Length: 215
Image (cartoon, rainbow, N blue to C red; front, side):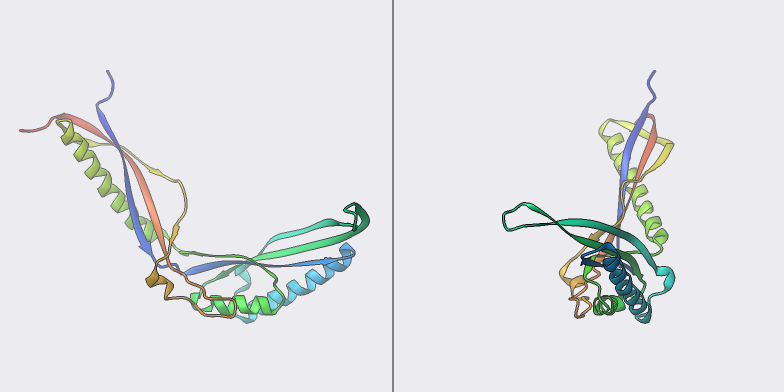
């Protein structure tokens, strides 16, 4: 016979303030040969790294994320490709900023040092364990409520928990609103608004059916 169980998916969401920002900054240089373009990109990146450290970013919070060289072939007035080429050299780093009030200053410092590529600013929680524990607690309550509702709809009594598994399907979701936007951090790079993050836990819980519902 088939097992007498009720399976539900409980969900719990907690809104929290981010406390860490990740910034992707870099430099792209073009030149007539790869050596010169690479040397210029390296010099600019050295200046960017020095500026980041001067702005208070720790060495451990700076990581190279990309280095590439690609060739662009020049096109003549007639639209045909010529023998001349342009070398593009790109170098980028990921920067972790642990003081959200300093995000604007860090961006300004990188741009002033020669950064001409900013790939984005992402906010997160450095230690999400406490927030996720709260979200799991809410998910467990939601699962129990759903199971009790289903049991009642079918005239049966809810039994003990047979199994529990956590559904892992993504990271924190940013949530912005007018209140949080007022936290914008002014800088020459533009206003930076950390907003809020929604962290969600999902639990799949299987309950046994104990028997008919009590009168």
